[in-house]
Amino acid sequence: MNASRFWQSSNSQQMTAKEGHECSGKNMKLDSLEGLKDDELQAVIGRSNELLQERDRQRKDKALGEARALLESVGLSLKDVAAAKPQKNGGGKSAAYHAGRQYQHPRE
Image (cartoon, rainbow, N blue to C red; front, side, top):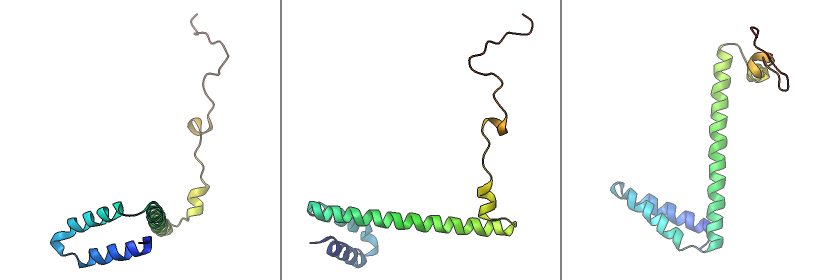
């Protein structure tokens, strides 16, 4: 059984499962994975990774769209926000003490 047939058969099994038997449908999928050969499992893993990447890209696109809409409502763009770089050490201030120098208390 190749991976595409596995997905088709597991999807049809899930669709035919009754409302009260959803949990047993998940167990059927897990049990059917155990019967696959190594190359078939690799194909399933590859497809799973593709699906995860696609969903991640969709979430990022949705978030960027919402961010653009929000920024446009206040008159800004993503470029305006991205151009601002964070300052290191408290806004460009140098450290109060420098390494390698000896300091003395003023009263001594």
